[in-house]
Amino acid sequence: MILHLYSPRACPGCGAENRDGSFCPGCAPEPLRSEGRCSRCFGKLESYTCGFCDERNVLFDRHISTFGLNAECKRVLQNWKFENERNSYQWFRPYLEHRLAELLSEEDIIQETGYLIYVGSGRSARNIRNYQPVADMGRQLATDQLPLKRMLQKKGKGKQSGFGRHDRFFQVKDSIQLTVEYRPAFYYVLLEDVFTTGATALEASRILKRESQARVFVLSLFMAD
Ligand SMILES: [Zn+2]
Ligand SMILES: [Zn+2]
Image (cartoon, rainbow, N blue to C red; front, side, top):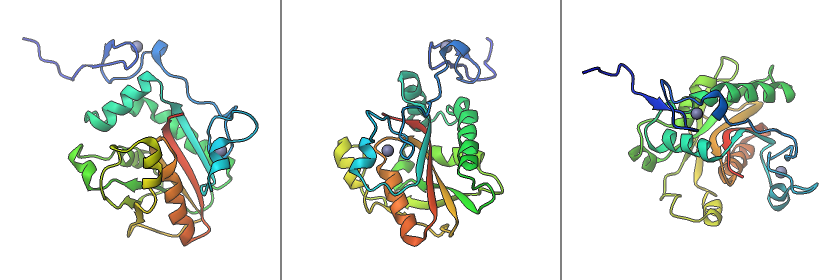
């Protein structure tokens, strides 16, 4: 009997087995382009105005995302968040690093004090997995100039998933709080695995802006739109 020395994984596009679950060259998704998107929230522009920004008091200074959520990306996200495939996002990582570098240089803040931050999950998420996807990703993106902090956390009352998209949006308000890792800074980069309604990013920004005038940028790996 031949033992597998590695667990065989498969391309999320075509299902062909490979070592690390990465995409074959022909199956690889295209990164999102900023053309035709809002310069603030990164949402698709229908005309010259942005529906998202028009309807809300958008408190973050800018959001930039990396990939959309086609069927293949959804599968990766599902495996990563719910199937204990802790490394399934690795294929996307260089693209995310590139977006972060782009953001810092475009905003001209490389010399300033900033933190890479994320929202720690509440108690209920710990039953699903023993790692937090966004924290893993943050540890790999962090640098000496941009240290990672779990600066915010979910307050941990109830689950989000039982509610519809609309309810979820309003439920997020007052569901996040600052942690002891909070530090004042010139800017924050809030890292998210997936930007869906934008509610978490808005609420996190509201809390941070209540403390200081810091600029808040949001960087997400996937964006549902
Ligand atoms: Zn493939
Ligand atoms: Zn917008």
